[in-house]
Image (cartoon, rainbow, N blue to C red; front, top):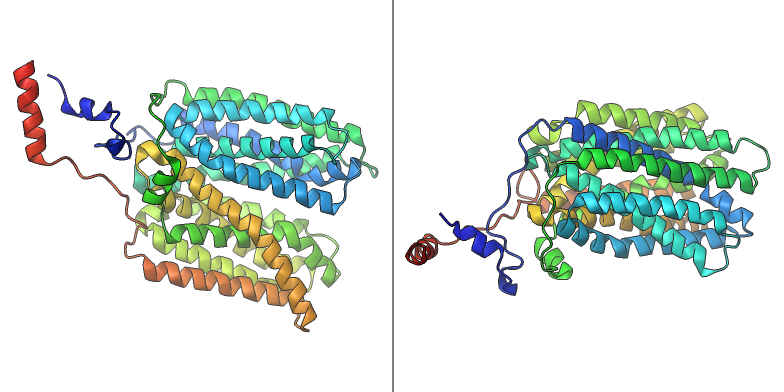
Length: 445
């Protein structure tokens, strides 16, 4: 017997390009099987490689650059990767996460090795490599998240994304410590920088093995006519969730950028305690709350995360000594652990499964946008408050807490469902139309 849905699925009619009639069901096997743990190992290796490159500023300095050049290089790379995210998301949906994941890992490794030939920061080569580096990272994490989240029902998506994300926290700690070990000499030279790039590239090559094992045997998306990206984003965009992602991205990026200068203003020499508490707290929170999105709901969990993040900013006001970094670090760790998986699940859930790769990239782009514009906004607040006589950093932390509160209130008021924006599924074809097709097929067969 011929199934009528096959004719609809293969149709090249542009009117049906955005409306697949059915949604494939996720696999019912255990979500924590071999694919998950292989993906976990691969992501752990790549986050170690990324953390090794936290010393990119030293590389730019060795090439004769200043903070001005560093800011431009990083900014151009971020903007380039933001633009590439949409193409990568469309590629994931068209060719499958396996190909994009493996291809992005290969590109990351090649970019790391290509940095060995860079001798100046004043030419276009370093900018192009930075764009390629950020784009490969976007492809790696976007494809891995899409692959893992596509194996479970919507209700457990936040759980799997959150547990996969714990690999990032551990990789961040190991990579930063390994980078300190390789660059422990008082005068950092080109040999140390080359070691960082070579080790990062080698870790990416090993991660390819785990990504291949994770996706081995997975069904690949068929090549189909390229769907219009702008139309898809406009149709399935998750609305207020994007603003929540931007606000969360801006707030979560503050410590990496301004914690050092905040500590220096207080006369505190070290900031390592903050990150030493931040990562373990996030890991423990992810494990403890892994099923909370399913039991409590994504919207309540997102609001809890925003409230804790707002409180974490206010806890900076009480810091006067190094050990007191403990309190805001706990707030930031808990909120990061909650917000990233819940926002990702809420945002990508509005996209049909066949466009889940694009949905994932849209949400990750929201976090990146928050980081891109959050730092200049924070710098403007620090500069402006100093000019009018207000305490600079207390003003920044209070302003960020208020911003998170306003966004959280708007999100709560505009979201009616306890589990986040409704998953927009397509209505089945009318019964009369299906019966007519069956009669035609029966007469022709």
